[in-house]
Length: 493
Image (tube, rainbow, N blue to C red; front, top):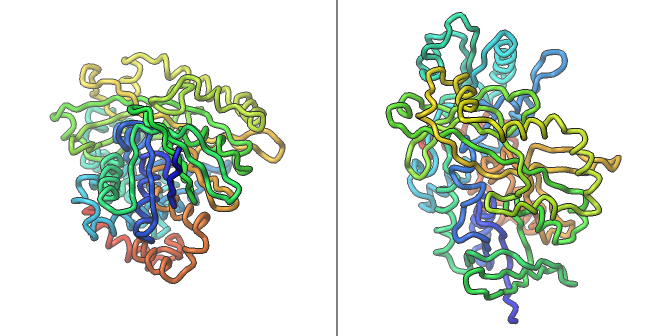
């Protein structure tokens, strides 16, 4: 079998691989890049518009990014970090639009206010304190707060129509929030990459073998499921951006850094309404507080979505327990991921998260009526016949080994990279796709360390992301400059 050479092999055809491929193509057009995808088209698992919230997670409305402390204060550090990371994505997409690489912005991103909504004395007190803490920072200085139902009738009419006016409620709003169709975004990036020299897309081609050679390069074998033909690549760098499929491939790599990692798979479902007379009455993303015991990905929200150009309302997600790592994966994925080095962490997490497991199993057995009853907290007039249930994507939360040998369940995203920089993988879920550009900058800095330090790559990166090398959390003037540009270029202002 002939062995083909490649500088970069991207495993997975989702937003992470597409973003890394696009960045590397802009930094060095001579790189030979191959993208391999197990399905017959790209952006069909977690990246697909129906499989994620499309919120453009910026910390504006997600209450789980600002946890309450024991003394009643609110911690905002994570919201600041995620907001700054999303601004990096907006800068990168703006550059691609300006260069004509991405199409008219409304084909993948649309202005959609981000709002938080709570009810009850405790909820209102929490939201007001959160707003007071966040609005003091320049990243969130445009956040509005109200407890006035007349204001809310303008902000979110479906949510407050026919609501008990004696009920204590409150909301915050950022007008320049976004709805992102990550599927359309990714497909457009990959379509452009396919027009470039030294780039190849291989569909229906899962990785069947992955091993490091003595010289540090990687042997990557893929098999075309339609023709049965196998192809072997010798790659200088491999990126595992295969969503739930990244963990098994990372384990297959055998790198020391993969030891101790496990995965906790969670499924999701949406209630979907596509009736024009209802959809046109709601134009925002309204997030509430997660039920006790629920994972962060289950924070309830009523969303305006524009997927493949078609508007809809989504409510959920309703979580569930699954043993699949991918929506189109195998029921044996979880069991196949168990190794001697992650067995104790996985058992430890199972033992200490029984409330979460019971919650997820309970979600599975909810009836349509139960789900619509939950929706009525956000839309009092909701009727069962107007909403249908649709499967969302799979999420594999990270299980990490702690210093004591046990395990901890993580609800973020994490880059795991080999110490020699020859391989990297992205694990985890939310905020995920929204921070793709920032995550791939991390991969480039860790795996292309010598090149990114060169004047050429430094100057090119500043063109792609003008805030590169600086902190938007600390630099208010820079934030105002880049935000003015992105809101204008992407038509979010």
